[in-house]
Amino acid sequence: MKKRFETEVIHNSYQAEEHQGSLVPPLYQTSTFTFANAEQGENRFAGKEEGYIYSRLGNPTVKILEDRMATLENGEAALAFSSGMAAVSAVLMALTKTGDHILCSQGVYGCTFGLMELLKEKYGIEHDFSQMDSVETLGNVILSNTACIYIETPINPTMKLVDLEMVAKVAKQKGIPVVVDNTFCSPYLQTPLTLGCDVVIHSATKYISGHGDVIAGMAVGKKDFIGQVSKTTQKDIGGIISPFDAWLLLRGIKTLPVRMDRHSENAKHLFEYLKTHPKVDYIYYPGDPENKDYAIMKKQMKTPGGLISFSIKGTKETAQTFMNQLQLIKIAVSLGDAESLIQHPATMTHAVVPEEERRKMGIENTLLRLSVGLEAWEDIKEDLDQAFQNI
Ligand code: LCS
Image (tube, rainbow, N blue to C red; front, side, top):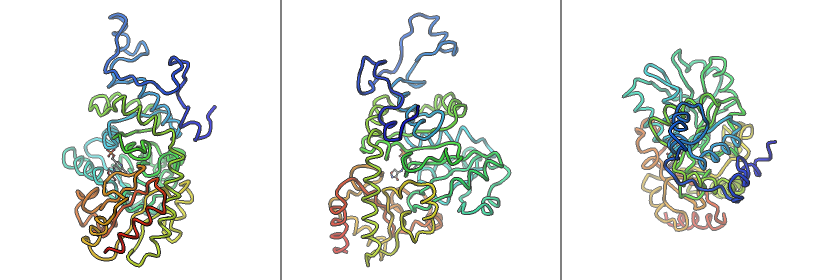
């Protein structure tokens, strides 16, 4: 029987009795698996006999992670990848072909934007960005060749939200699969599959790992679809995770709920501090009751999460000077780590997006994105405070 989330992150899909009583899942650090005889090898390749063959096709440590993530996201099956981008590209390539169209949320991570451009230029797969803020809007932007809807919510780095239940309902009527990048929430804060969406993607590099020492990705969905990705765009393009990275993720994921609660709690305090700061122009934070997406946050997220984007009054140089004054908060891309990290989207994560597109997405040159870490929030606040005093 399925247990509560906090229990499943620790115990799901692992039986110590099957592994010499080892409390922690063993690391199967092996590239290949030996067959007892030639016939066994033939039968495994032919799918007539269950069993491992070669770690690009499956690995026991990786399988524990995949099964656990499938349960946490309320999906039937999952696959682990070498990066979030490997997961995004494998899923999109499995769902589309030349002549198709992808409908995207009004903003995506910079490299996902880059992938959309590549798919257009090399393979003739078009895309559009849309607000997706009502059934009417969706009715106008879904085209006859729309093969999938691709959503980030919260959107990196503007923290805009998309009502997943609403989009899933419209998409279902038209038979279009909805893919959701759930990186900013993790399954602890939001489970898109339970809201009617079809595939969930993660940059597991972020909150799933939580410790800033792994680059990895995940895709979760129906057994048939995940099986198809496993046999095609994962197997043949080859963006598989290493067993050691899967093992590190199994270690990190155990504390996911504890970490997410702390990230969210810290972020709430820092939002309160930033919202009245005279040198802050505006803030993008889904927990802001004045944010237009606040009702969506209440509806589909457990808490507003650990990310805050804010615009500094002044210019790009003011924002950069502010970053350079910080001492505790590190200047780095990535997010979801124990360490608080700050980055400048216009010149970092979203530098590949042309300025005009960035403006449409809401990424001004004065915008900073803070990934609130697990330190004492008072210390993070004091660091922000001294940096503000020096600009
Ligand atoms: N999806 C989202 C929403 C992301 O934020 C990222 C990476 C990816 C996918 C790709 O995952 P990766 O291949 O890096 O594991 N986002 C980054 C960011 O905001 N700063 O550095 C990387």
